Length: 431
Ligand SMILES: *Cc1c(COP(=O)(O)O)cnc(C)c1O
Ligand SMILES: [Zn+2]
Image (spheres, rainbow, N blue to C red):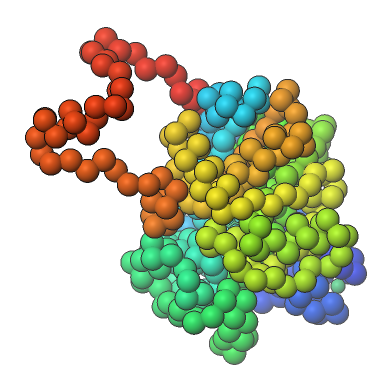
């Protein structure tokens, strides 16, 4: 890792050299002493440039390997993670009154969420460190992505999920052959139990806030956005916030690109939480430290009552001159419908919470019509079909006869398109 210079504690600024099994600042402890990975940008610029990327056909996050805290040579997990599409969402933009809106659909990843990015880094590092078992606690997606990446290289995965994790995600874990511990309690309970078990057994720790390398994997989503927008920085990047690692990672991408001299300006970050579980928004508004909250939302992936990386997330939002906003479960379900109907993108509740926040932020005048906005969809809707049905309702049930169909369709007024019908373009993919 000649590209990494050191790890710096975000609390006391002490610096450390990376070494196996070392994740948090020993002086500040594992809650406050979150570390940040620092790079040698001259080194990075020797190995990668806008021009080299333009000719690089690697369709995954590893196209940014010099920006990542992994060995610069040697094996990587084989699943194709990242390089997800950035869609220009003109129909949704028009509904919201936005001139230039883009959707980054990270639901297309191998296990269908953005978490595949940090998990790929975790498994690459676990392989390099010779670990035999990787472990994490997760609201679901970190778990399924870790289990998938581990399976792809023959590593054993031990996963702790809260009892409420949706079936789709649990099914993924079991299919990938992970050892799944369903903790009958909250995410916080699952996190604590996993931390104790990891300590006891010496497994490779994939808990995102504790392990400073994982945020770096998350940043590839926004490295991609920058490249997909031809290095024209958006005014706003909007995403949902649970533990806060995705926000921290997304912001780190822009900071790294600026420090490396690739971009001039920085976007503003809009973080979105669920009303029923919003400890980070509350801390942001009150200017206080994060205090625990109930986990009371159907957006399970961001139902994090005791966030593990609030400081990095809060700094990201503040440093970017951005803000935090809350959305209700009803607004999340409505956003699922609007996003699906206008763009053909199907997100899970936490995956579209960003879109719900965007809708609200435009309505409240936080985001202006002429501003250029990117919203991340962080997880696929098929992971949580029960809530999708709650959002979308039931199909039209008919007996198998034309008569019954005519009757049922009677007042629906569907257009009678023939063969010559050319649908209007819904989404123009930027590249
Ligand atoms: C994990 C997750 C988030 C939030 O990321 P944090 O790092 O916990 O803030 C958002 N959406 C989905 C789908 C997720 O799985
Ligand atoms: Zn410290």
